[in-house]
Image 1 (cartoon, rainbow, N blue to C red):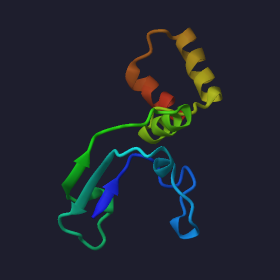
Image 2: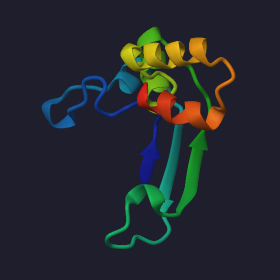
Image 3: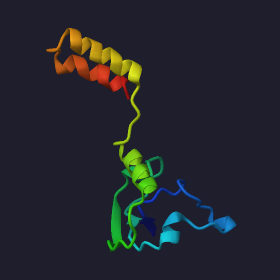
Length: 113
C-alpha cells in the first residue's frame, strides 16, 4: 500500500534509515491518501498506472507555511522564473506592433520560461 501525503519527500530532511523525521511527521498532519496499484506493468511509468484508493484522511491540522506554499507552487508549475531578456524582446515587439496575433506571441512567450 502506498501513501500520497502531498509533501515532497526530498524537500526537507527525510532519511528514515538515519533516524531523521520528515516535515510531515514534525507537524503531525494526519492528511493522507493511501492507494494500491491495480495492475503493475513492466516498462510503464508508475504515474500512468491505474490505482485504487484504499483510505483517505482529509483532515488537516497544519497550516501552510510560506516555505511549503512555495514548494507547492513550484511543483504545480505556477512558480516559474522568467527569462527577462526574452521578455524584453517580446515587449519591444508589442511596442512596435501592438496588434500582433497571439499565434505569433505564444512561441516567444514559451521561450521566456
